[in-house]
Amino acid sequence: MFKIRYLLFLCLPLLLLSWQTDTDLPVKQQVTATLKADILKEAAWALKQDPVTVTTETCSRSSGGKHDFYSEGDYWWPNPQDPNSPYIQKDGLTNPQNFVAHRLAMIRFSRIIGALASAYQITGDKKYVKQALWHLKAWFITPETLMNPNLQYAQAIKGVATGRGIGIIDTIQLMEVVQGVEAMQNSSLIDQQTLVGIKGWFSQYITWLTTHPYGKDEMNAKNNHGTCWAMQTACFAKFTGNKEVMDFCRTRFKEVLLPSQIAADGSFPLELKRTKPYGYSIFNLDAMTTLCQILSDKNDNLWTYQTPDGRSIKKGIQFLYPFLKDKNTWPYAHDVMHWESWPVAQPSLVFGAAAYGNAEWLNTWKKLDHTPKDEEIIRNLPVRHPLIWLN
Image (cartoon, rainbow, N blue to C red; front, top):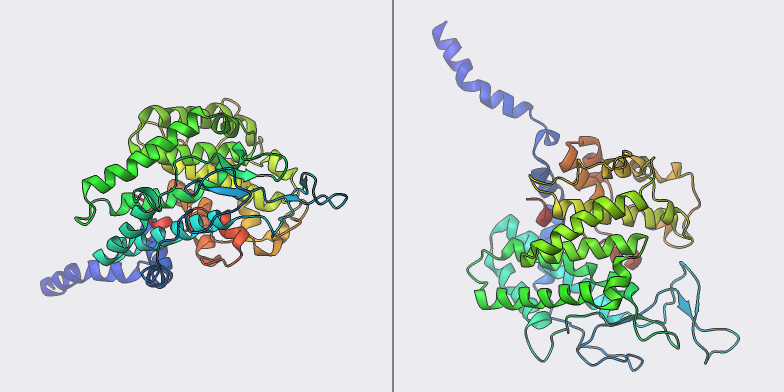
């Protein structure tokens, strides 16, 4: 009898382990298991890519120089009454003739660094860090190819503006670059001089974001643009150790973004008014949850914060979740473009699952598309490599 009990005692941990399902594992382990094959495939692609920065292609309509990021407003078109007159707006309808090469280059850069950093986390192979450094130096350090740390000429409109604060949303693509550097910065391949140079670039950009009139305009935007200003500024401030700006963004989330953008039922009324209410609601929820992921710590947890009248980011996820699970239940107008491409594996679900221990949200995230091909969706999905965001 003693021997039987002893054998049962030895075997019990193995029996319990065999009964454990994937959903019992920590969120980061589940995310790794879900994405590993895709990450290694994308990282293999990234290892073969040469750097492409803003200096690779220029536009004659830009008022800036070779090192200045330039883009044109998506929803602006030639006036059919007079092709030589200033462009006119068609909200939600993208003009495919506008210059977006720099934006595409930045998205490509973000994908490369996100994939390499994720693969490095999984494998520990330094070849991924070595390749990432080549691209990082090209964008932020090498004099011949670097980008100037401002967005003075973004989202220009022919005949109307040489640049606008609204264009600042384009650099949300740099967040995964920052997260990637943080995931790799302890590697012996990254020397302090390079790290200081990269952080110096982002410190300069934060100064521009917080002092230039375009930066202030975007900060005060009342819809997803204001959210994205806070999200990316907080991300860059955390990377550079700028506690003052981080605290400012926390306060802005509590006192401005939640009270003015999330309704009592968790919806985003300003986004629901747009011509793409579904996509914009998803995008804004992703941005708010990413902001919570960036800034929450043991002393100030934005995931649990509520306004005095009960508005919270949790309510935002709870409102939109049924329509992410089944968009056919969406009770509002359908988007004028790209309706068929949403939703994909939205970061709001994986971050929310980690914050609240919600297995249902995580399981829905697992089933959604992790490798979207629609460029509009990719542009509005700055968190494409959640593994490097989960600490």
